[in-house]
Length: 265
Image: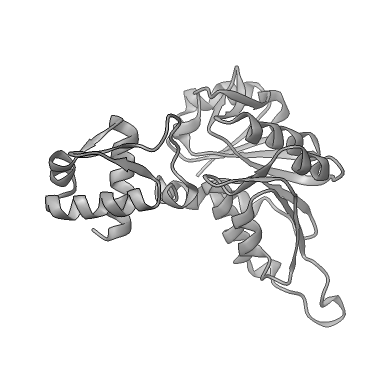
């Protein structure tokens, strides 16, 4: 197990249990107590947790893992979902991407599509795709691709998700129109709609959905049929749900009854 994998596991255990003790954590990871103490010290230096005499507790009252430590969760499912979402995007479109691990994978998949490569000849310099995003990490990854025109909203950055939110971000996004919005969520329930944990992110995602002709929800099956604090949009506002095969036929039926196209990969 690499150090990054140990850190990911320790942070997952901390979220699950609410606190960590060194000896049980060492046993769960199959490493020495000294290794766990060293890992906890290094995570504490990054302000990802607070060290205690015998282990660690979450940093602050409201605890959320930064994006870089959530990328390995359900990685295979997210990869398949991102490929399916990217296949729905047509060259020449203006697309909107919210922040999140799955939408970040969508951006990477789009960057690797051969038919979205930089054009040659008379079309050289013309964007193949215009990407509107409030996610700093997505903009950073795509801006080096000359075939993409990147439009980044302003706003206040959230360190956990790298997303820009607030009135400045909403002011820019409200002036734009996109063909397809690809939205990452924390929850999507047929009755309650799509939602996230934070109201500022929900407000940005809601506005992006309103400015789009087509809305695609990209979410693994663990996020379906559950609710979260801040609503993004009603189920009726969603055109396509791309998820994994963990969603059963019975689980898909309520979404399909609400006129949502369900793609399971």
